[in-house]
Image (cartoon, rainbow, N blue to C red; front, top):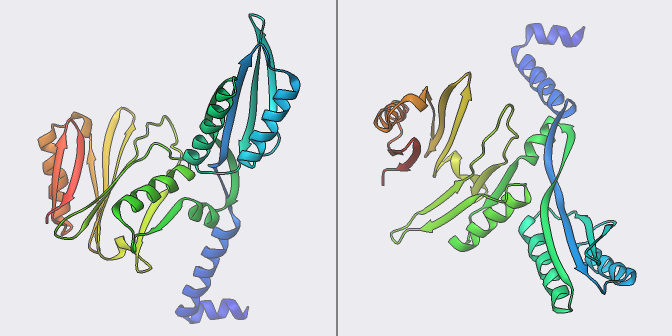
Length: 286
């Protein structure tokens, strides 16, 4: 009753209590989503002279190399030759790292006379964690301090691969007169609910670039009941704007350009908008 009385008579206490409840709910209510928990590796060995002891040795070496758990072996025979597929899961989330190690391992086996090939795919699992944990799992924080363009580009690409986005197109370019362009492009097509993509947050001196300096653009096209809506989120030097263009698939490039540019200007953002065959590019006016 004392708490209820404080809520009714002291507005500041009300805000504090409601805020605490919101944090508590976010901390305890679980959400279900998929995340990359490692990499599945399938190593195929083939040949007439492969024995059980050879397979056991290769399996042990593969396990030690990847730091993985058990290795499952599927055996078959084709045209009198034995064929073995060794499957295991590495807990390392960095796909390129596991891919490189597995390919080099297969090359080593080939040099010893084995017929060997390898395939590496992300190991996804559906997990249920509190909403707060889910949010942090989807955010990739990368500091730009003291890093060359090449180093920053490699780090962004590697962190995204670890998070299950191995096909991201990343480019970082330094301008002679100062300034740096960081471009990140990930294209996905979904039917139904889309699996969330991780968010990359670039930081300088401990603060997110989008909180002050910097220029960021996020573009999404969503088709519902046959109608496509183009949505853009643009942040520029502390200003932000959300632009929506309904029925963008029925509009000309010039019409989309005018609509996006007009909405950005209304939000106080000066940007150069280019649309080519429906593909939108937005750059700051230097």
